[in-house]
Image 1: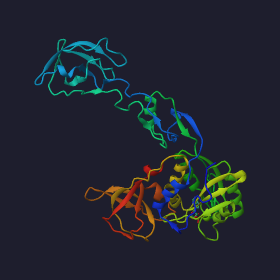
Image 2: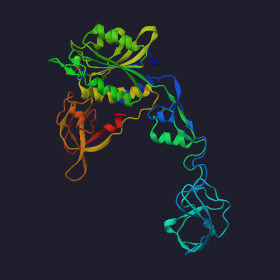
Image 3: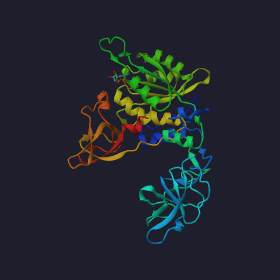
Image 4: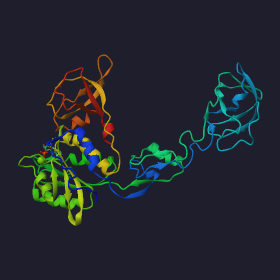
Length: 423
Ligand code: AMP
Ligand code: MG
């Protein structure tokens, strides 16, 4: 499974700054091996295994960009109108019968090949016909409304780079090249479970003092949206032996094991002990709020199986924030993709906030228009990491820099839309 060295996640410093996390992941996590071709209709979201070059010019031939009249620009008068005889008609999918003679024009439709000799197209909206004679107004420039062979992409040009997460438009480009499949890496395989004596499965009775499992469904959806396959291993109690057994089994056949809950250093938190028994845990005390602590390590299973491990905090909003900032780049690296740091939009704060220096903070919030019409960020009424509505009732994360200690209304903060980070 995943190739992970013994020191994959080892780091001496007590709390790793977020800016140092992604380079570390990039340096230490190797993508999964194993390529396969995938049919275009199943390719969206898959990771391209190697660069794909254009096999042919696109468009394959010079053609008209509009419905109109193809002509020779050299025939046009320097000033005033020009009169040209309309001698032929060419529609998309058909070629002109003969080259365009000087002093003539051809009726042409969008996508039809330019007749030999024609270099410019007059849009039909700008044309006037006087019987069979076309009256061309002045002002047409050479090459207007003509699409040249290879202008979209030329044969041999880089069509799609390795590590690309294939989009709908990428699929269109591949199809336009006549391809039916693309080479992709195999999907990353993830094992997922929740931990906690109080956590029960939705659809079953809810005992007093218990809560339904929200995180597993959150993390399942987030993980699958990144193109991984997920094995749902259910809920485990706060019991180090049971956790260790489950981790050992999950290591086989998976590249990454994700848990939520039980990673603090409290008496009832057993994930750390379990991971230390099964592999090695380097508590990456990532300098992030909500989220500290996030546990990362490497698990060793039977027959030399190895898997990366991330233990996320139990509070749902903390699990979400740490997933997008820690698991997401790790998962994309394993998948062979090149993760781009999320685009952080600078916006004006419409709120006041105090924080401790030395860690990045993510508040859940939305953008609205301030009194002067400029956009500003506002925070959800509940700042606590336990509130799931702080995720459902907002549009993104408000990012407050590591060393900021106070935000006052009017300050600039960062805003990361959920759309940027949840797929
Ligand atoms: P822990 O990280 O185990 O200390 O849990 C922190 C908080 O998150 C506690 O209030 C837990 O009940 C809650 N929590 C843990 N796991 C889940 C889960 N799977 N779904 C919803 N809440 C959870
Ligand atoms: Mg717990």
